[in-house]
Length: 235
Image (cartoon, rainbow, N blue to C red; front, top):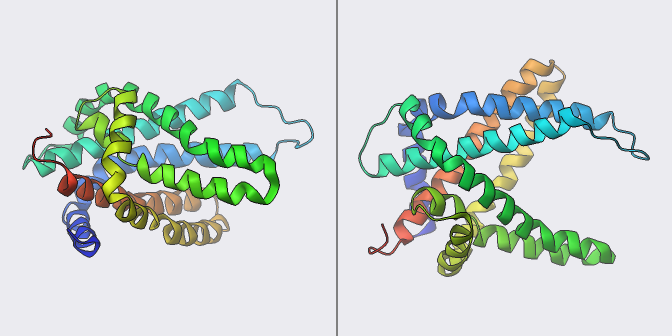
């Protein structure tokens, strides 16, 4: 299937299920954005010559990872159930997604470390960090299906990482093209966030939550690409 067809079908799905997606994800996005904004304020206060991070910051980071894992688990399960013709409620999806949170959390940590390793390693060599950035983005594309492997394929974290890397090989260019959608969304999001910040924290929180919700379209498009690229024998 062509990339334009993937985007068209993803757009139609996102539009037709807008209310359900909002009910399922916006409460979690509000929590996630709230934590991110608080951490941002705290980081702005840090003394760069003597940075200190306390227990509240560590707890906030853990809550952020946990909330993100619940969000991804719920969204992926919703996409899977809708692809099978089911019409689950937001509460039902959220409850059913909780068992997937621990493996998703572990898979996210492992794949995140693998993605960040090249850019961090090459950063020690000055301008060569750009090479590391390219490698990291390529790994990001190869590991973009880890979440689907955990939730849809019911694989363990390490199996999901291996499965995503193997699965994404033939469709890596299409995957990269979809992931590149994050760039314009990020630019627009930063502009809106900066403008909303002048209106106060609540307005900035609503603006960031809105853009995070729009960003879920990329996940929907990736899931569609994943579904059409699966081998018929894979359940």
